[in-house]
Amino acid sequence: MTSETTTARLVEFDDAGLETWCEDERFEVIGERIGEYAAATNDPIEAHLAGKVASPVFAIVPVFEAMMMPVIEVAPLDIFGRVVHGEQDFHFHRAIQPGDQLVSRAKATGYTSRSNGTAITILVECRTEAGELVNEQYLTAFFRNIDAGKTVGATAPAHKFDENLRAQPPVAVVPQHVDDDQTFRYSPASGDPVPLHLDEQVAKDAGLPGIIAHGLCTMAFASWAVLTEVGASDVNRLKRFAVRFAKMVFPGDDLETRIWKVGSADGITTYAFETVRGDDVVLSDGLAEIAE
Image (cartoon, rainbow, N blue to C red; front, side, top):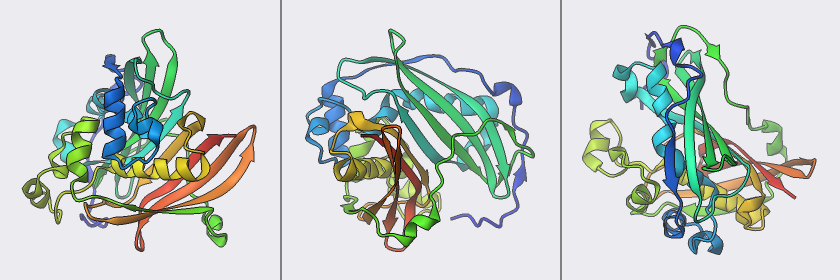
C-alpha cells in the first residue's frame, strides 16, 4: 500500500459543486434481488434469504449509481484513481421491501483536508416515489495523498469507537469466513463491477497481491453478525449502522466481528463493534443503534 508519509499533492477542489443534488436515480425492488444479495453476503437470516425484507447494507444497491456523482462535481477527474471508500453510515427510517419503487439523490456537503489526503462527505437520500424517506446515507470518498488545501462545509456525523470499551469483554464474538468466490457472487448481486474485485491481473497491476473483497460486503457480514446476536434478527429494529473501512479484506480470509454494548436511552440501545482478521482491524469505528 502507498506510504502515508508520501508528500501530498496540492489539488484545487471546486466548492461550487457542494450542496448540489444530483439527478434522481430510480430503482425497483424485487424479492429475488433481495435474496441474491443476502446469499452473496453469507447472511443467515431467513427473511433476507427469502426476499421478504432487505438486509441493512442492501440499501447501497438502489443508490449505487447516484452516490458517486457528486464527487465528480467537486474533485478533478484526473485524481479518481486515488479514491477509496473511507466510511459508510446508514440512517434507517424503515427497511426496504419487495415492491418498493425507490428514488435516490446525492450531494457533496463538504470536504476535509488532512495530512494523508482529503475526504469528501456525500449525503444520499433514498425515498419512495410517494416521497416517504426510507434511509439517509453518509459516505466518505477519501483521496489518498491529495491535499485540497482547506476544509469546507459539513462532515458526516461521528461514530468513533470508545477505546474504554476494551476494558470489558464484548457481549458477542461472531466468527466469519470470506469465501474464495465471494467477490464473484457479490458483484452481480450488488451491481458493483469494479475490476479490483474480479480480475487478478488488474488488482496486481494496481499493486495489490490479488483481488480484494468489496468493503460493503464485509460491512454486510458485520450487519448480520450484529442483528443475529443483539437484534433478534429483526432488520426493522436497526436504526443506524456505521463503519470505517480500515484495511483491505481478501477472499479466503477468516474474520471475527466483536460487539460491545454502549448503553440505552429513549428506546434505543447503542452497540459498538469492529471486524478483525487476526490482529488487523478491517472494519473500525462500528456503531449500531437498535430499537428496543
